[in-house]
Amino acid sequence: MGKYGIVVFCVFFMGMQGLVGQYLLAGSDFIDQGQPSYFPLAKKDFKRLSSSYGNRIHPLHHIPKKHHGIDLVANSGSSVYAAAKGLVIKASYEKGYGNHIVIQHINGTKTLYGHLELMLIDEGAITERGQTIGTVGETGQVTGPHLHFEIWRLNTKVNPLLFWEQLIQQRKSVITHNSVLSR
Ligand SMILES: [Zn+2]
Image (tube, rainbow, N blue to C red):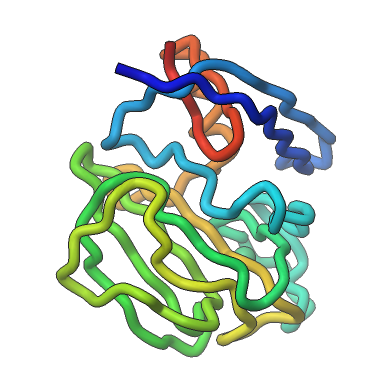
C-alpha cells in the first residue's frame, strides 16, 4: 500500500551535453524498496545541481575527466538519506571521495555518497530507504560542501538522472518530495 505524497519536488539539472533540463513531477507515494529512488537530500536542504554526470574539466585538476556521479549542493551538516534499502558495504575515508558510503541494494544496484562530514552508519549494517546515513560535508577533493552521488548498475556507474528518468518511464512513476514513485 502506498501513501500519497503532497510535496512537489523539483530537480533542476544540466544535461550531459550541455542541454538544460528540468523535472517538475508529482504523484503518489508508493515505491519498490529495492530501487535507488529516494532523493538523498531533503527538499529544504537541496540547493542546486553543481555538476552533472559525464565529461568535464575537473574543478581542482583542470584537466578533462569523466564525472561518474552528480553533485548536489547543500550546507555542511545537512542529512543524507539512503536511496533504497540495502547493505552498507563501505563506510570509510578515501583521498578523492573523502568520507564515503557505498550501499548494495537487493536488485544489483549500488549507490555511493561522497564527501560526507559524518558517516552515521557502519559497514555491514542494513539501512532502510530514506534512513539518515550521514551528513553533507567537504571531505576529500572538493571545492565546497556538496553530496557526490553515484548509482552503479552491475558495477557500471550510470547517470543517476537518466536512471531516475528510466524508472519514471518504466513504472509510470514520478518524483515527489524525496522519491521516484510508482503508482
Ligand atoms: Zn562529484
